[in-house]
Structures are given as structure tokens and as C-alpha cells.
Amino acid sequence: MKTITIKLPEQEAKELDIFIKKEHYPSKSEFIRNLLMEKMETKLTKESLESINKSIREIKEGKTISLEEVRKKYGL
Image (cartoon, rainbow, N blue to C red; front, side):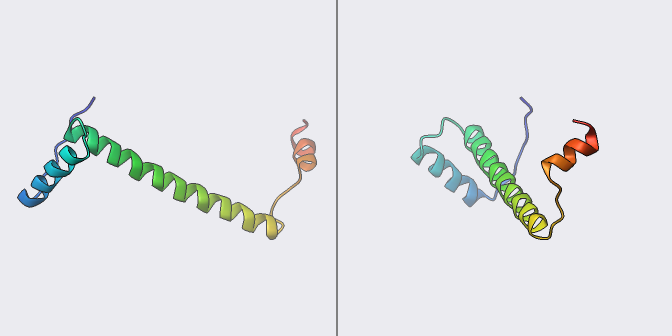
């Protein structure tokens, strides 16, 4: 694993320590790893939803081709 360093104001660092103990995280590192993964999953979910919505718009606008057309185009 790669080590990173973050700086927090003293009060936030104390609150983080309290939270980690209260929620029974084994370490600050474990908490931050979980937090980062949750944030990235949320971002991926938003991007996926945007992609789905874009696809729906394209279907409604007739900007798609049928499976049969794809087969013909690519000789499948």
C-alpha cells in the first residue's frame, strides 16, 4: 500500500478520533479508505445514471441502430 498524509485542524482531528472509536473502526486509515471508496462508488453511480439517461434520450431521438443493422454493418 502507498502511504498518504493529510492535515486537519486540531478540532477536526479530535472529532475524527472520537468518531472512529464510537463507530469501532480499527484505525483512521481504515475509516478513510472506506470513506474514499464510498465517495468513488457514488461518483461512478452518478456517471452511470448520466450515461443511462443519455442513452434513453438518444433512443427517443432515433439516434440508435437495430441489432440487425449492426450485424449487417460488421458482417456478423
